[in-house]
Image (cartoon, rainbow, N blue to C red; front, side, top):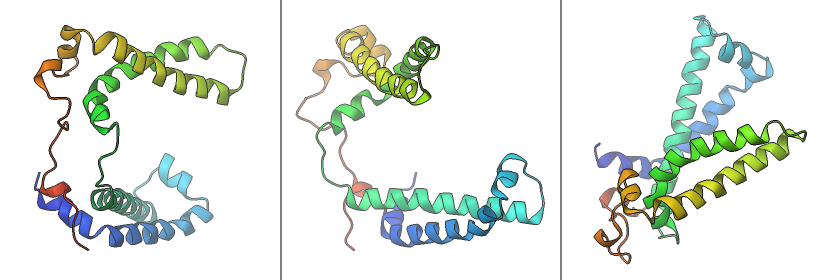
Length: 173
């Protein structure tokens, strides 16, 4: 990827967010007319449906790039735990799906509210994934390698996981 793109997005994030708001507001008439359900779930190739898809796609792109630009520009401090999160992101991703499925299979039959089931599955799977990661994957060298983690002696714990490059450096306004 071109290293200039993050710099451009960071410089123009305000304009992107304003465009995102404007384009989202442009969808308001379709929403008030009750047409969004038609456009989303039964799309056609009519002019209004295509216009909706173009405006929605542009709005989404503006929101995503504007949010990324804001983050590149303003979220420049090192936050405690960021190195840990960067290190365990992939193994967490791999472990969380089976954890969610197994926990949900146990929780769904409960005779309780949907919100309670959702909370138990969400919080329980997060906790169970962290426990698996910390007690099973990280301490066992072959599992560390299998999940893409560096061996404990390969990296200096005082070093950050990645070095910032010019694309992530704070930009002058």
